[in-house]
Amino acid sequence: MLQVKLIVTGDDFGYCPRRNQGIVDCFLAGAVSNVSLLVNGSAAADAAKLARRYNIPIGLHANLSEGSPVCEVLRTNSSLLNQDGFFHGKMGFRTALSKGLLNMSEVKRELKAQVELFRELTGHLPPHMDGHQHIHVLPGKKGILFFQRRAEVRHVFAEVLEEYGIKYTRVPIEPGLHNCDWIPPSLMDFYLGVEEDSFNTVDVFTRHGIRWPDIYIGLSTMGKNMSVSNIWSAIDTAIVEFTSKAPCPAHPTPQSGTVTIELMVHPGYPSVPPVGGCGEGPDDFSQSWERLHELQTLIKPELQSHYKTRNIQLCSFKDL
Image 1: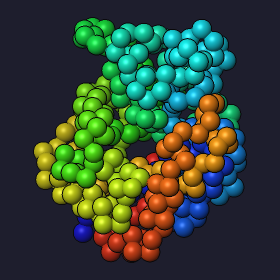
Image 2: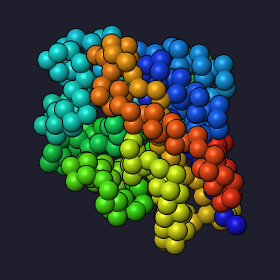
Image 3: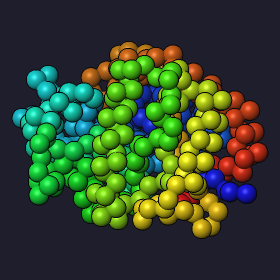
Image 4: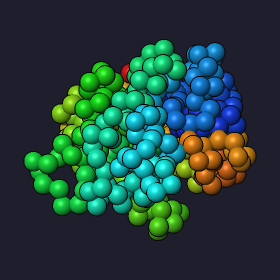
């Protein structure tokens, strides 16, 4: 039987005390096996202490889109900031990027500052590093020429990982995404944009020696769309697609009979303003009932039972 190693990553660790507690509760229940830390989150220091206390595998959730930079020099007069002095936001970052308004040297400086702060908080470098709101797979300005590709976010991100020896990241290409008719059209448009950016990122990450799990899941199972059956279906669909496709250099068909999957999740107890956020208070996403819905779904016994039945072993990036 094919063995599946499943990394269930709780994103946004450090966002607020209630998010931290929810993720820890999931970890202790065996429902989350890995976390991704927002070092500019209001409860990042507390999150790092919790990770040490409970021996939770922890990586870096690099953030260039929400809240404030951790690099002091970039907190004023930076291309990364909007007129209110905060990052441009999920869509605002993408707009500023496409117009060529972002200074890539500042992007690199902030990413390195976040790695250093992660090391200061946890005592070690992150085994894996991904991007909040999928910023790490973004290109550069519109119309960029091939020889200008060093001016892309994904290229800068890959350089930082290589410089620090961080081996693993996330490439959010989800098998079966196009068939998920329950996802609203506006959200699907964003997801398909993330998917296209991710396809175009594979070569960049590969050239820098960066790796990622064989399969990514997390867009179709997010928030209110998370259910035990949806997670089962997403895993089964992804495994069938992966084992039947032609091998590529980054992900050859598994010779050992093992396939690796990352399931991105966002469990937690909803944030209560004004506590939380990354410098400008908690957003609607963090205050939503959907955070609790994810938590309650992930800890259901039937989901844990399914993992055992299908020979699925929960692990972290450190176990790959």
